[in-house]
Length: 93
Length: 191
Image 1 (cartoon, rainbow over the protein chains, first blue to last red):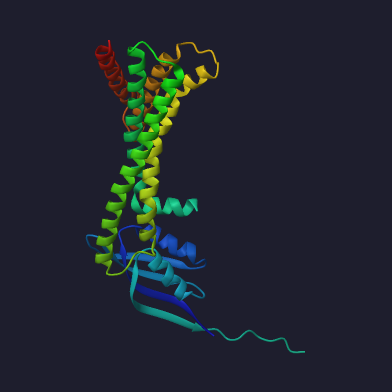
Image 2 (cartoon, rainbow over the protein chains, first blue to last red):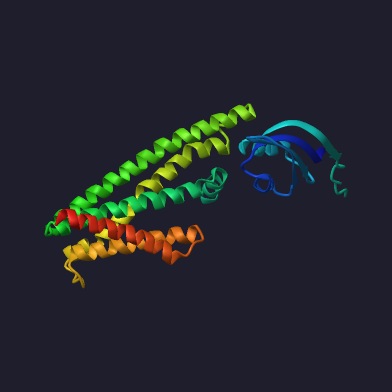
């Protein structure tokens, strides 16, 4: 079964929470995820950010819900890495 | 729950506003009750239960007024800010942390603004209660209340000084001086 290993999102967020709190909130709600937030543009009330998330199995829907719950919105998926793990070996008698 | 509350306060930077409201309305409360007790003192004194009722009545009125005024103004401000943010982000924020903060923060700030004068009033009228309960005080009850009011004003000033990174003693003495001036004016008018 395939799982998302790395995903790069284009996210528009308000100034608050700031990049540190924003990244921490995503990581807190999604244990095992490594989160990197880069602010690429700052407007009067918003910031455009690139959010890079890495994990063995990224729960994409939960990530999106966390991001929207913080008042931000996912504009696009800019990059994604998906892996297909072999099925677990069965013990043969 | 407290983590969520702390997060929402951080999100809106409301802790600074709440602190400002606490000092402002706490100062109002302390000075109002000082005014009442000074008035009773200048008029030659009244029965302690009457003084307690009058001070408590004023404290409750200040609490309700403080809560209502802060809630109404903060709710309007937060709603406006939320609408502006929604326009900038081009999506609805009602179910987000910002939406929750816009609903919760006015209640929190209203509570702080309302209870600040109430707490100050309770502190100041404590000697009246203690006297009524039969406890012996080193001063007459009204005088003891006036002294507690001066101490409360000094402590509020010292708190402001600590928050603003100024010398707390000077800041405390400044608010104490305001209290002394108020008391002086009441004494002159009431004499």
